[in-house]
Structure formats: structure tokens, C-alpha cells
Image 1 (spheres, rainbow, N blue to C red):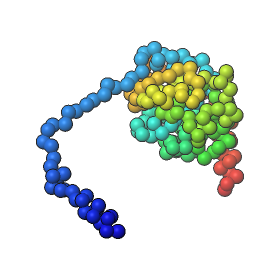
Image 2 (image 1 turned 180 degrees about the vertical axis):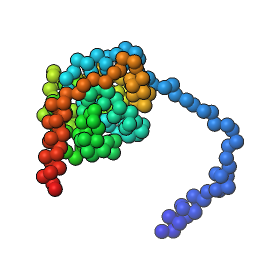
Image 3 (image 1 turned 90 degrees about the vertical axis):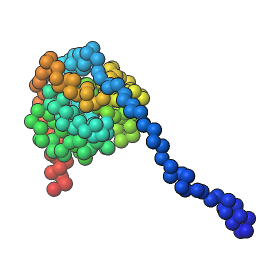
Image 4 (image 1 turned 135 degrees about the horizontal axis):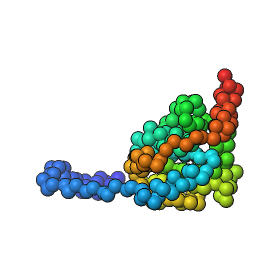
Amino acid sequence: HSFLERWCSGLRVDYKKLSVRSTAAVPKVSAPALTATNAQGQGVLDMGKAANRVLVHAGTGTSHSCTEGLALKFAETLGAAITTSWGARCCMLEDPAASTKSCLVPFIYVQANNEAHVTADLVIVLGSRLGETDWWGKMPYWGHPNRQRFIYVDVDAANLGNIHQSDLCIQADLSIFLRQMIARPDFVERAPNQEWFNTLSGMCKARRDSQD
């Protein structure tokens, strides 16, 4: 005990010396904006036109970048359904009929989510690496890789296709990417697959009615 007291007594700190602040100016560091190339944007358009059931899957990067509204506009223009990761559940209203041009499939409707993930022939992943709560993008909760194409958009290159194979990886700030796409003159509204939308929204309604 006496040894510990002697040892601790030697740990006195002069806090007056520690409180001295530097008057040197802190240099401002700005990173270049990460944007999609024109070829990448064209790739999104071409793959979207070729697909029959387009799904936009929003991850936490969507909520962190405050791009929920832009993501919805992007999906509506593509005629795409929307799902979210667990962490990005706040990105959408939990009402499949909240959009007249898209089909919102809230995270709470697990079977409808699985149906959307399995049957989509093009998945555009916004700000998500497809982790554990997304079943790592693997079967049977997602479609067969030979029949389902993937586009990744993320500001972090480490998240691009690191879990699921990708047909197109785009390292870009989501806010900039979505604004770029929406501003393109050739990014025009396409009719959604209404039969697919009806199936997904019907599954959501059936599940909700069973809880009432």
C-alpha cells in the first residue's frame, strides 16, 4: 500500500502547462468531390433500361448523406421499387402507397423484402455494403448472381462489391451522384413493372392486416 502511494505521488501533472494553446493557424484541408463519370452514368441508364424489375436498396449512407428525397426521386424516375437496410429504415415512410411512382417496401415486412430482393433483375445499392442484416446479398434471400445484376454506389471504395459481385461500381458522394443522374436530360421517367409492384404492396398489406 505504501509503495502504491509513493508511486502515485510521482504522477502529479502541471495542468497550467497543459492548458497552453497554440496560436498557429490550422490549415484547411478540402478533399476533391467524388463524382460519377459520364460513362458510369450512362451505364446506370443502359442497365436500367434493359431491366424489367429494378430495385433501389438504400443503406445507411443514404441517411448519413441526407439524400432520402433524392433517392426517392431517382427510384421514381427509374420505375424502381425501394428497400432499405436495417440502419436506413428511417429513409422511407413505412407505407408502400406513399409514392405513386415507386413501391416502398418497408424493412418491417420481411417476406415482401425477401420477394423484392429475390425477384429484382437489377439492384442499385446506395451507400450500403450489404452486411449481416442484408443477408450479405446471398441466396436464398437475394437472386441468383447469374440472373441479377448489381450496381454499387458508395463514397467508400472499400464498400464497393466487397461482399457481393458487382456489374458496375461507382465511387461517388451519394448527394452528387443522385443530383448528377436526376439532372441528366436523358434520365427520363420510365413506366414501372406494375404487376411486380402490386405483388410487393399486396404482400405488405397482407402482413399488416394480419397484425390488426
